[in-house]
Amino acid sequence: MKSDIHPEYRPVVFQDTGAQFAFLTRSTIHTKDSIVWEDGNEYPLVKVEISSKSHPFYTGKQKMVDTGGRVDKFRRRYADK
Image 1 (cartoon, one colour):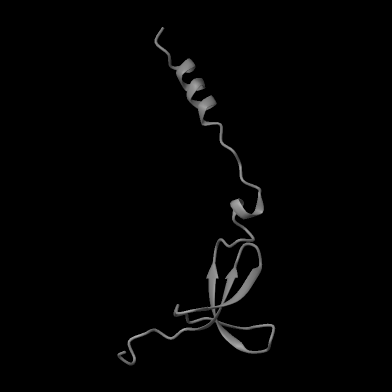
Image 2 (cartoon, one colour):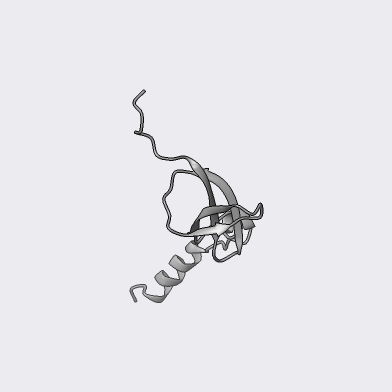
């Protein structure tokens, strides 16, 4: 194998800004921010808007949209008279 062609695979902290949830995993992503983790070590930090703690699919708080009712209401309102 060629040397120095693979990105650095290292521990990184991903933080959900909306749910105040963070987890430590390994990634090749580059970031300028860093954070001191629970173990006292400093790791690169990636801020995300949605994670398993805030996504409606995982939290069970998703809203069901009644699209059929909206279409019927539109047709009744603008039906040819």
